Length: 247
Length: 221
Image 1 (tube, rainbow over the protein chains, first blue to last red):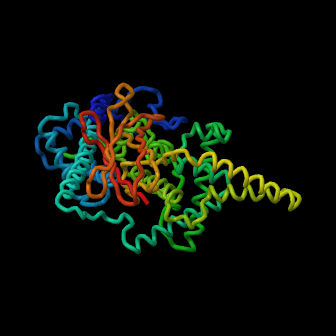
Image 2: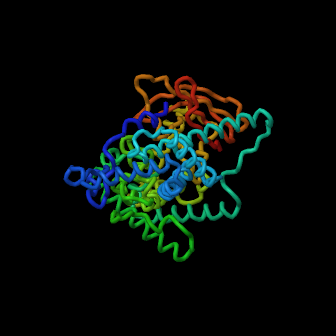
Image 3: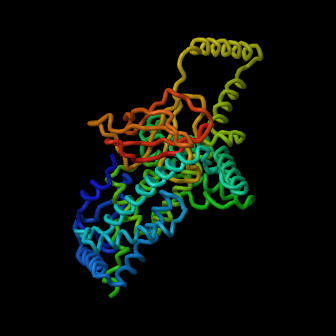
């Protein structure tokens, strides 16, 4: 069973708060943070009013409202759709999603305008589910007509395949040059998908040690990779392996 | 009429690196995934950060598991071999080494003989709905498989253990196998006793009332 529809209805909580006034901090446990002092700041009302006003303009079919909506969400919708469905016909999918959002707002289906972000997310997720459903049904119908249906080779053309193999080979080389402990941390966490608890238990680490070691292992992986990239000129994965938390 | 306030600043705080990694590894609880996805709709810098995390994790996984790349030295195997070699080198004399090697060979033979008639253990295959560089999950042909279904939207429902079931079809859409989905360690799992021939397959996950929820690609080789 798919939960998004139920979940979206259940997260209608306080309106989003401007970050500049009441910054939400990253907690030590890696969860999303809470406002510093637990209070709702005075500008929350402005943001609330901003969403309400935007939704109202869209409802009244004002062009600038739709433009603003597109400016705000088009990149995020494109990013989500591309991540879930791939780059094929992406412009059409973004456009279709935008049209569905606007039409739904005009029909009055968004009852809490301050929840516009959650509303857009719900529609994007439904679009993804609908697309997958369409692909499955098309494949079924196609199979009935053509028993020799061909499946695209996922490896791409020979040039792409060669670049891919070169990049993966480089990553394996770098992994091989890391210290045993660094390699074990990265392999266990990212490749074998072991949980932090399991890794800590089996390697005899505390939670803090694990985080520190993982962070250092990623940094070393990045450094080694960059050195090799200088020689081989490959794009990629090593250029940013440890994310700063400054933004 | 323009914006009264900068609505792009209204999303909750930027997620930590750990949160993004958990999201990419499909392990982020729904209660955290929802606000994160809403944040991602508006925040360009976090979209970039997530894309990079995606690529890092995806490349590492492919590098670690891709069967086509077996000619590259596997880090885990290399480490184990080095450990045994170091141990052997530490032994003082050739006779001792030979005796140890013989004893090991006998032990291996005994283990192989004892286990030979038993059924093959299923090989775990992780199926993800994420479209990445490799949309078809690799799986060994000729072996029973344990299909681990990864999707942040789907949660095991302990009250309804038979709520989900899977159907495996070949590239032409012909049904190959159907079976129930069980819950193990918070994940959805389907175990196939049937082995597959080489080729492309599709795993379809159905919910209650036979509603099609997901489809995953599988490449047996």
